[in-house]
Length: 254
Image (cartoon, rainbow, N blue to C red; front, top):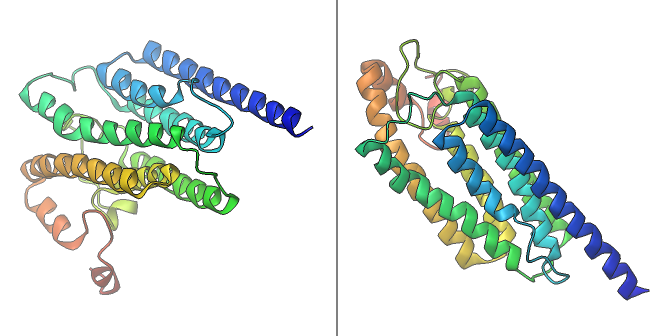
């Protein structure tokens, strides 16, 4: 009976993984049909790779299923975001664009894919408490990511560091407290990926890689914002934190 129950669970796990893969693949295909662009293609592939439905067995099923859930949910979020926000004229494939791909995208993609595959291969049992913590952290980051992008708006949010004619400096809602809440949100999501590995080494390396990628992006993004908005942006930067709120200034009403 135990063997039959194990087979039943494993069969259900395989169905779940295949279903997630096919659902994501369908969303990805529709997204490319609606707005085919290099950014959406690149982002979609990053989350597609960890969803490949091969390598699942009884020993790694718990973490494998959690990785499948994470990449389905956050992959759909990211693909939809970039379908809505990317304009054909944004990607120029000039020197600056290539630099962003190498310095910004590559370290973050390495973190997301690397942490996913380390977790997929882990045979450490997944306890209910650990799963609850990971899911809570993951959902917090995912919700904050959606809110940050929604509040910034499709006009201002984009992959490439370009500014549209009607773009305004955003300093309200989440952006009142943090200059880059969408990046903070993604780091929270990547923390959930790191926790899923149950490996200090893999988790720390993944977080450092992602942090480097975001910090690289922030350096160039803030340079562009200074050039675009001048003293208004410098004043905003002085009173808000880059990653986390400056609580003392908030208490002082600044």
